Amino acid sequence: MDYLENAEEAAFRMGVRAWLAENAPKDWRARYPTEDDLARLHREWQRTLYDGGYVGLSWPVDYGGRGLSATYEAILNDELGKADTPRISFHNYLGRAIFTYGTEAQKQRFLPPMLRGEIQWCQGFSEPGAGSDLASLRTSAVLDGDHYVVNGQKMWTSGAQHADWCILLVRTDRDAPKHKGITCLLAPVNQPGITVRPIHISDGSPETCEMFFDDVRVPVTQRIGDPGAGWRIAMTVLAFERGPADVGLIATFQTALAKLETYAEERAIDRDPQIRQAIARTYVIGEVLRLNVVEQLSLRNAGRPPGPDGSVARLLLTQAEQALRSLEFRLRAADAVSGRAPDVLANYLRSRTISIFGGTSEIQKNILAGQVLGLPR
Image (cartoon, rainbow, N blue to C red; front, side, top):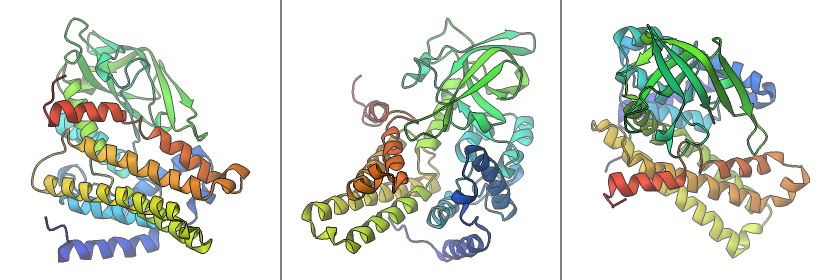
């Protein structure tokens, strides 16, 4: 239960902090105001981090990583959160599908450019009618010689409008049980037959997309794993997505809460006992999340990969972010509705969606009930 950093880890943290002070983009939100600007910034920032030796810290050296423990990845993410840098790519969880299940040729082809930011990825999992019940997906892939022919639709595909490749779940066996007939393919987003349409979410940003596949041909060499292994691959990806990899979110939460405390103190509204209780309750929720994250991280370092209990962290993250943004809106409601602080309303609206993406809170509870607690269906 000793979560303190050793001398090497502490030195690494100081090195990251000094490097970020020199290299992190300044005033990047003002300098990159549009979605296209941000997409370009994310690629540039990914390459800058890679050149500095800060991408793929826990990845195998053979594929462009540094072969360090997951603790170093967590320290990096923590410092990125404190420095309020742009986000990095989705490689930490989407890449798991390739280097866990891919062939050696696929690993050499895709993993190094993924780390360098030369290839951006999106995750083609959910569909209309197959979001929470992902195994009900209907996008089909029929084998035609040495190619699969893909037809169907994907929904809620974050970043698809700026992605180069898509990790795609398709149904290849309609007669198999629904969890067994799914296969995982890698498809270039800009190839003929794929149409991407951005979806504007509640805060107005086109963060996610719908994708249409009309007779899209994907070579068999771009299949990850065996036919029918798609569900197992998807669960590996989702375990890392829901798990403790993005520890930087803790730092972001703590920074935002500290600003709200200062805001309340400066206006003397922290003397209201209900306000004080709300701040204290939000702090406690965030601290529970932090402790769960470091516990999960310690288990990973002990050799246990993320599993279904990662849903605990996912539920705690939802609770923490929604508590934080509800508190922010409560303290700054007048500024939010008058337009003086538009980010406050946007933050609040975005926080409501967190209980949906990456698997709804109801799905997370079902996972914990069935796979962790062993409760009956």
